[in-house]
Length: 410
Image (tube, rainbow, N blue to C red):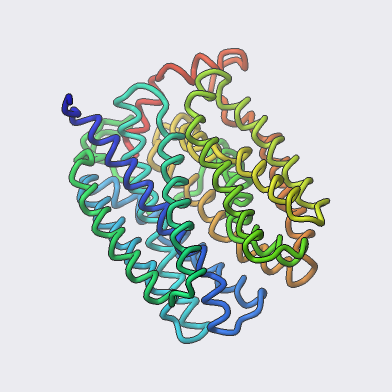
């Protein structure tokens, strides 16, 4: 068997890191009901606690961008993915709601910083390949989420204490992440010359330009729908359609499987129809899925609706990152800003949905999700590369541009 070259090994390694990151998130999502039951918290209090990861992530993503710029990619990514895996064990150990909030704050901070580092690695590998691979990398994140959620569902079914389950999973994933990190590219952002020179550091915080802000808002819409559906789909089926626990769990499974398939096929689709059409049609598909969820009062059509949402939002994150890299002379700052907006949205979504459900109802809350999916479709035009005509989008998706290559300064 032919040995993989360095770039191919790096692609395998960064794919593994994405999968490990997803497995942590999937494992945690399955044990949220256990944590809520143990602490005797209602949906409103749980929703408040689930805002903490968003706060931690938003607060630390700008710092992560500085770290990515300053330090070599391989050791930094390994350390941050190790911290992310370790944070998985914390929420189940919380003895009360305030401590749960603090543990989720740490969990969110680790999530955001590891996410920025691994996406920076993915962008560099994609640039060196000269073709789109980011959607596939995020597909591996979804694969990891499926594996983590399946293991978590089995642990919950067998009534395994979540403290033991999450501690064991955290240890196993930390070892796998550390080993995978050996093959990552040992790049440093300062070694790649940008328009301002090779050594200039991005500011800790700077308000994004209008173009970057608009791109970030598209990401906000897509990732909000992803976060809301991922954490509340099973609860929706239980409370609104009166599904039994086993059938309710299929809502998340259908959503995650559909998203995984969409991401794994996403690079192929983007190369053929371009990023604008991909996000526009995806937004309309997700909107149709949201409407189906809203009108469903039986489990099967609701599961189908969540699956459509998963397909529709599948490629939003990699495409908004690519668009951000083309939007400014300093792509590192632009991508960090978009990541903060998009991932902050995804981490905040479960808590916001819980608050709306507490004040009104779950269908009202998912009506907001449906409206955001429609807004994503309307706003897809902002992903078009600057100075190009709409008809040129498919060819631009298949061939690297000078702007795409500048993404390596992130």
